[in-house]
Length: 365
Image (tube, rainbow, N blue to C red; front, side, top):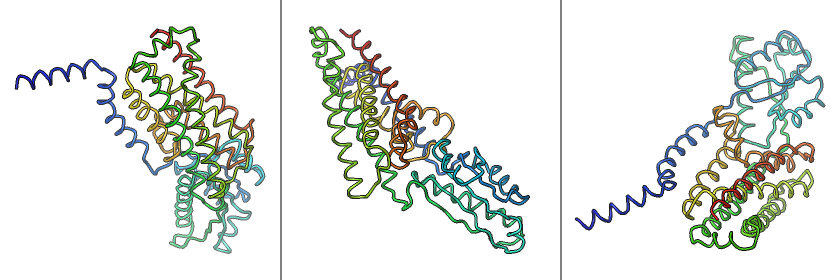
């Protein structure tokens, strides 16, 4: 028993000395509960939409009031024509557009049957499906109040934009590219640099007559090349096998991927500058970057239905901006002027993190 107590004392001493590992072990369960508890939700509130009211009568205004009062939608535009709706999808990033036909009140009174057109952004099928169900429920309540029966005289005519065939591949490919880049670039970069620190060879590299920036770049570039090859492979398979379109510029798409790889590498470098072991680097990258990217990027779950705190937190992780940019290029045919802000955010993240990492590594010399 004496020998066992000595071994236990030794192990607990080692655990408490390694504060990063101890923190991760205690914090990971809490983080997982909070992330999964708040991000996995099927409710969406205040989705941005446009309403084209061609009737502009009392009943159409009542319907618009019911839509806004539901809490599910936020009307950000009242276009005058259908051509303006296309601009709203690109300029205001609306999720859905509703077109109320002419003589809406008269048709309800005389024909007892009206067709309302819905235009949905189906680049994210989960969001589009949920919002369409919300519209159906609102219209059902509206008609019940109007005629006092269970009959629904309003038929929905749905037009699907950016993914007319409702192909789920269109939604998953950008997310898969994002996660692959995180794994290959960020994870492998952080582990590689952490291994140099753990074995003591990083100190030798830093005192060598070579700029420390070249040391870091030389360690990161091979994994960026591998990540780039994997990305091209995924895109080719998606286009050839699953007929996924690339409506925008292929070169712009590749440029966005390269900038995101730089950002991922910068995150990996920043993580490696804070830890002393490969295990710590792997745990922090997986739990602090990979998992939040999967949950907070809009890949698996809509960001709009998360609590406001997590919507703000999602802005910190580069995956959100990359997925928005790559979807806009591939599915919407957006150009550089449409996504320059997302590219700038990614580039600034990479620049800031790489600078802080080099400063941190220089202190270890």
